[in-house]
Length: 384
Image (tube, rainbow, N blue to C red):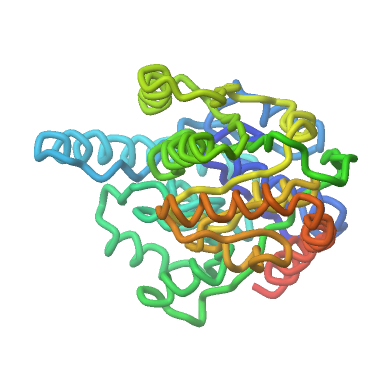
């Protein structure tokens, strides 16, 4: 029986990367020839209890990110580097203690599985335990999160190259990494997305006014301000529509957006905060929008399709891999306000013709609930 230790970068079951990994683990737990362990940063956010209920042995240790935002000033650069190196050293010391604990338990870990590129904990642990290492990369870095690695991206790619396998979640991400690491180590696996909790919007005709929903981290790279400006332009043209933004509103950027809407008296824009009941929230909307600079995959896109929303996304990152324009959704030219205005205006004027697109999207989304990703990963684990 192979023993696999999964390393999580956070302890929030509903955060994108963690939710995707849980979907895979749920299927792997059905196999009778794997024993699964987990290492998480803390036991405060619900992941610990969830894993324990699944009879997963959980280790807890302080794990910190190894990336930081692209600095705008020299002072910020120095601060990020010093703080970042301290975090990496702290993570190593935490992992060193965990490796000693695992060895005392006489648990021979065969493989360490890192769930994102944000922490090097899995890299350290695989070396300390002399285990094989799979690194599941879920982010571009600068393109989608405006982040770089504290040790420098070149050194990060060198670390990636030491892995036995590097899994990526889209062709777009695979293309980027193929320029820096051994292509034989790269493996494309689109995420499984558990859709059993998704609620399907019953009304088949899109309503008037159009109700648009944006779901995700509120940050500059996600493009919420661009969509707010688009809503204002549409309303000035007489296209009746509203925008609701779901995401944590505690960040400085979120507060700036809120102030921007207030200051400019932009009507029909609402901030809903973080919502646990996002599947129920979607029932009240017609359109879902993905406005980010570069999506590495598009979990929110798939979930929106499954809920019966007409999905709109920018023509960047992995979006064109999921959305076939005018077939199962719509693409617009990234950061081109007129392009997005045209797409929403088209939907507004052709509401009765959207049912075929909606049905195509639901069918496409359901392809991601079949467990293909977890089966591919299971086969990989068995063959390493």
